[in-house]
Amino acid sequence: MSENNYDVVIIGSGPGGYVAAIRAAQLGMTVACIEKEPNLGGTCSNWGCIPSKALLDSSEFYYQAKHDFAKHGLKVDKIDIDLPTMMKRKDGVVSSNTQGISFLFKKNKITHVKGTARISAPGKVVVTASDGEKTLTAKHIIVATGSAPIELPAFKFDGKRIISSDNAISLPKIPEKMLIIGAGVIGLELGSVWSRLGTQVLVVEFLDRIVPNMDKEMTTALQKQLEKQGFKFKFKTGAQSATVEGDKVKVAWTSGEDKGVEEADVVLVAVGRKPYTQGLGLTEVGVELDKRGFVVVDGHYQTKVPGIYAIGDVIGGLMLAHKAEEEGVALVELLAGQAGHVNYNAVPNVVYTNPELASVGYGEDDAKANGFEIKIGKFPLLANGRAKAMGQTEGFVKVIGDAKTDRLLGVHILAPRASDMIAEAAVAIEFASSVEDVARSVHAHPTLAEAFKEAALAVDKRAIHM
Image (cartoon, rainbow, N blue to C red; front, top):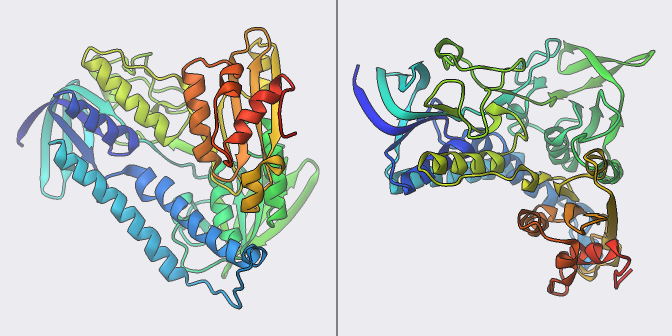
């Protein structure tokens, strides 16, 4: 066994891990990042954010060509789907992204260690690879192993008929019907991909609404748009069991006293993700896990064991790539004696459907529950010049302000490219902006972002174009 000593050893090369590695290297630390998968980038780059967005864009182009081009005077007599080419393009996007991370590792002199990691003691990580074992020693160990899809006992993944989100980005053919268990972000996004390509999508959800962690008014509006696109929903419904019969899956469900069976070609289980801590040796060295298996950390991402830290999905909270990135940066800056910090109230959340739904800060119910007296302004895209020019006027912007102080509390956007528009709102909340600050800011015309300004004006009933 060989010895290798570093200032920081990071387990996992997803958004939290690789960003922490780069920032630590920038701060002059010697860094090793351990990854058990063939490519860097974790779930986000290989099976999640990047490939799903590549497929969302490809499927959206097809949907527009089929349904919207004629409105623009563009005549397409026939349009076909070449699924293998679409998948090849998606794989190319993934490869480009992971290769980019490898380049950044080399640029910043970060040691990429291939293998499976296990913390054997504080300051020591054993890496097992095809060529044997070696031990890395470090002043600081950062666990950034992310999460994995939750598998339901009655719906064991077989990768073909009963699938996880990992499988849903690589289906060999377009299903005639897909049943999705779970109306969260992952289910709606992947459902959108296949719905646009012609699949009948049925979403079964135990709760009474989609995306329950976002503003209810906004998610209700998104649900209506998805239903117009062909989605069907069964709420307050529990999926009980699955029976694979040939090339079909029969799913038994219950809703109150009602029972039934739905048949589908593919069942996508999208009920959330669980922390990945398997085989890491955490509890053996004294690291505490909570009852759901998340690593317990303090405000500085320190576990109960000095020198061992954790960030990203593995510690819970918002399971978002950009949240993990910010935690990685904050942690290594703290290790370097700087003032690393993450403002969780300014972390945006996005559903990449069409229209997209993006939010940052408080939702209406959350703001009230936290004791705020609120005032609300809304502005419809139907009154926005750029949205009219695009032919995409479904959606609106909702601004929530503090009625006493005028502080901007939350922004919610249902619109094309809401994922880009929300950045302005995140900056405003980070700087503790007032609603008036946004209302007075000059926005270029014509842009979708003008709807944000108008919604801010509408808080005090001053919207110009409504």
